[in-house]
Length: 266
Image 1 (cartoon, helix red, strand yellow):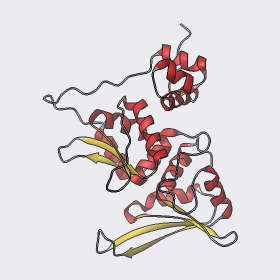
Image 2 (tube, helix red, strand yellow):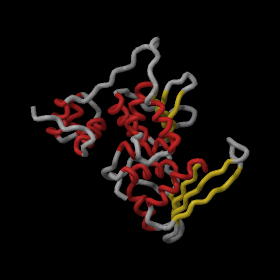
Image 3 (cartoon, helix red, strand yellow):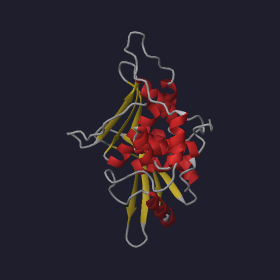
Image 4 (tube, one colour):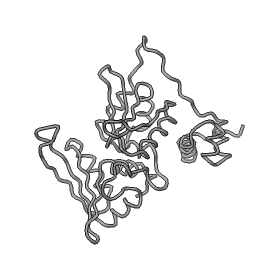
């Protein structure tokens, strides 16, 4: 499961949020993912990506939110598959506060799209303003999205658990939401179709003429790119450039993977 491959990075982000890894007696155990039946197609795509036997079933029951709710459940029991997922960073048992970004190299935008599709929202407010948000109990996941979004949008967020639920609510709106959605939802990439459609709609939004001007993001300059590559240390570059270490890490990754153009020698 190479997380530099977009499909697997997305799938892993989704599983970290909505998957449950259970460990039984001996080598027994399972991975299960239960989501609304309207999104069953994404489970079928996960099933095709997985070279082990798995099953998809549907069930209807009562919930706190609806008298009847139909869900789709993907179940995978292979020990080898479960071991791979666990080694990459999907914990066994309760994980809401302990889960963190994958161990090793991974495609950040695809991974975060999986996280947003599973536990986030993409849409419009009642006033018609676009937004992208994520609710999570994990400090590591909240910090990673915050730093990634700062790099992409130029909009900084202070993460803090709310007093009522003890969770983080990251929220981006208007131009920041447009930039983040455009960065995460690429044409032809694996995603929930309904959220991808909404992300495309967000791109068409325009700030009303009577609304105060938007914050201007801080773009990377060729000189900053050269300093980053010369120092070859995100922490040293962060101190030199007045940016966060995570922002420097993400920029270095984009440069080295060809997602951003290398600076010229001039």
